[in-house]
Image (cartoon, rainbow, N blue to C red; front, side, top):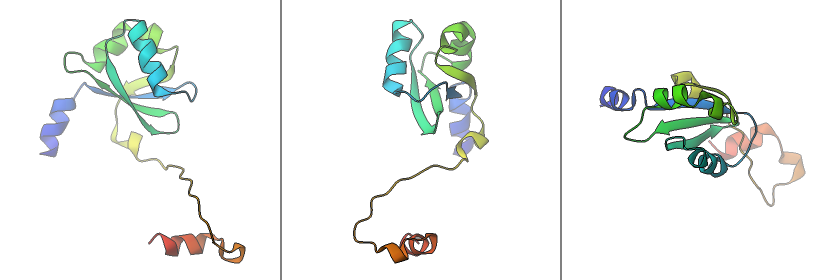
Length: 113
């Protein structure tokens, strides 16, 4: 099943590195305004985003035909690699009632195991 999925999305997935942290909806709106074929953009963490071409387009064609426009928002747009999703993420949590003397890594490791 996994091989079938990979064949279906081959050429459809790219990874983009944003030049700055901004709202993805803003970038998608601007892409539409610049007449760049529609592609879905999903956050992967930090400035890294996953770009998925619509059914009738391929990301390779979108990147090749719109390189100058895409470079306004992205440092790099490249084909997706498995390593692109293996990074760490920062998570913030809000805890109430935790005493300061137990506020250490070991406490939270036990709490979330």
